[in-house]
Image 1 (cartoon, rainbow, N blue to C red):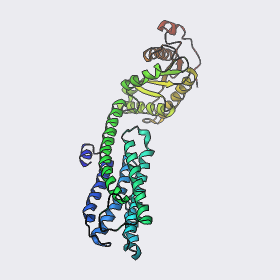
Image 2: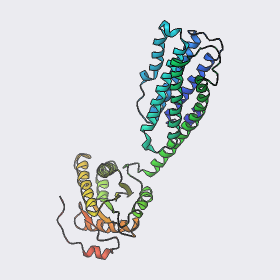
Image 3: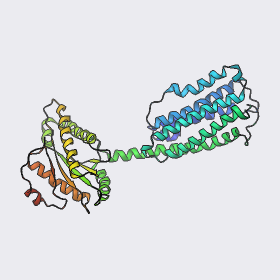
Image 4: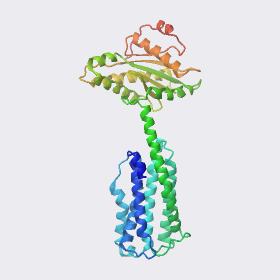
Length: 380
């Protein structure tokens, strides 16, 4: 686990889990004697470490989900056990000591399983074996706690025989440690690979998809559209962007591009795809959207972008965007839609820019589009 963390230091969850296993390993020699006496310092320290170890597994799950780790919660199990140990009746009962320890272990493991389950949307397949192992181990500890507290109790002296439930917990813990180590490392690597894929598919400046990712993801979305499913594409081009760069510099120009990416992602649905096709040109694929719905979305982005750029630089930059829309028909491809939307975008440029135009059809020629370009009122 530590070696895996050294390879990917961003994977802090692996390091927390390594700490949990190290504490578990440190506690074993303190408990590995046939003549243990309740209250002996090694026994107290060993069981205290056993109470902290599952809390570190919970912390690992929180770290994987990039959630805050409360150190007070991590130490709470050990504190509860030590407070109980201060009571004479508890101190003289090995069954009570082991039972409370298993209750604490079970609670933290169930909490860790829940932490992994709640972030199931990140599509890490190694997450699910971890959830299963955590639930099984937590359940075993819960049954062992019940057995120690209410059924046959346990003495700290003597062997944990296999036909007892506590003996089963000992054996099952070995499988848990090995299995979770394997899947924790696998999940860290899986997350690292996913991060690289996301970085390669995301435009670093604007936060939208790269051109390659746009075509790789957009083509299946268009192919999935048939006679019963609508899909529309919007092409955007920032008006006079070269003049903005030449006049104000690349810093404000980059900020304008960022503002457009932010305005587009805030306006579009999570199911829509927005990508930077090159320079100041962007494309969006809207599955399930009609031409009218795409037109409304493009207008909202146009207005939101103009408002977002009002504060760029000293406020003198007037950045606008033109857009062209095309709707898929049976047999349409992403390339044919891009060509149709590009012709509509060209028409928007001819008619004064800062506007949205709709393409005639994916099969329309440039001559047909230019012939249809009659002056029309700009949409407010």
